[in-house]
Image 1 (tube, rainbow, N blue to C red):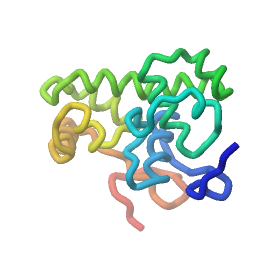
Image 2 (image 1 turned 45 degrees about the vertical axis):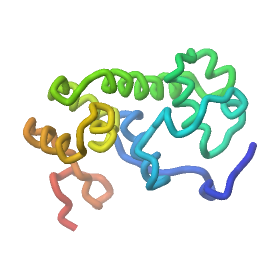
Image 3 (image 1 turned 90 degrees about the vertical axis):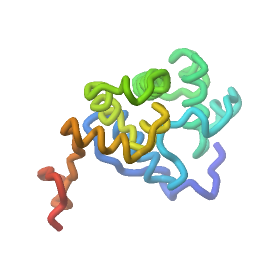
Length: 163
């Protein structure tokens, strides 16, 4: 295993989400300001890099999913549990679908599901060839807001934090 200098001491992050996909994308954004999420365009596809655990392997994995690698093939290369691989595939599949749309085709239901998969407004805007502000306005017009978990140990959620 190769551990680069950018790996954290135990290699873990914390993110809150209702689904794995949402928490995973948020965690990736927390690790690096230059990362928007589970992005198949960050690293080139390489079977060798898939076999070797590194802090960048997840982006090679995204590229492999976008290239059509099967869950079984990825399991054989990475030994990552198939449940996690399927959740990661869900993210990439939804991204590919969004990239085939323009902003006018982005319905409230599609936008809600994109948010449930952890895509940021900036990611969605990139996919549908729009702007982050335009996506935010569309989300607000449809009543789709993020819940902000209060710092009271996540005991309740609110529109804005009071602390």
